[in-house]
Length: 342
Image (cartoon, rainbow, N blue to C red):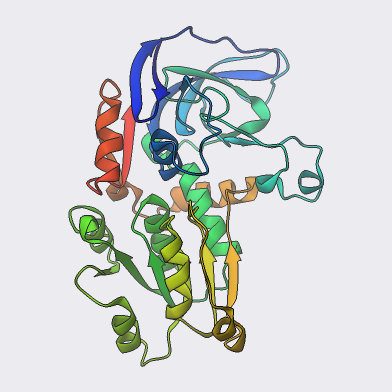
């Protein structure tokens, strides 16, 4: 079968690999659509914090597909069902797993990084890691369940946001835009900030979703926030940039008594001056991955159409030319590229 394999730093190629077969506890899934996320790109670049990613390997962890075969110990899924995978596989035995914090399990296995992933025509999955998708959700929409679950965790559980709150989302990447769209649907006043390169595709995409944007290469974000909030600051800042400067500046834009939620993974250490943070009782929180409950939330969002994922998804990329999707992502010329393996 055809698969997209990373063979080295900034090296991806299409290879013929052996089609897998399910074990007794597994499901064989025919992959239909698979998206590219920031973590895939970080692994592609072998950035700091991703040196452990094993190569060569089949990439990909966010996808949707159809069940084509089930193992003898799998009664829950039927051939023909649409499913998505929870790609952070917990050990089920550590303290975090025991108390329901499986997204930060001490012994996780990350699909598409530590094991072969879903940029392929078929993949096998432990049935316990699958989520069934209702019939009313289109398959290419279902393929954003994983990043939408990550956004749902950040927006719904790790932050304290209510309708009417002022929100700044730093970084118009896929997670940033999904967080912004979720909070916009709740009635918050959302602003998305981006760099000059984001003006080609990502900031206009946010505007198409009806969300206010700021190009910080032309506009001083601090002055903009002061003007928009009468010098109070925003209630919540979500930093999804994955750059240390995002965390460092986020604390300047949040109001006293407000909060900062760090979602991106900065590759370098940040320097924060804590005196004004303490004096302002600013809450700094983090959000990583998603729990099964967050996946259920994401499926519900897709089912009721609360977020316009059709606008966010970019299906213009062919699985036969995977490098173009990664390079365009890095250049800010796409936000949620998605390969089709149909």
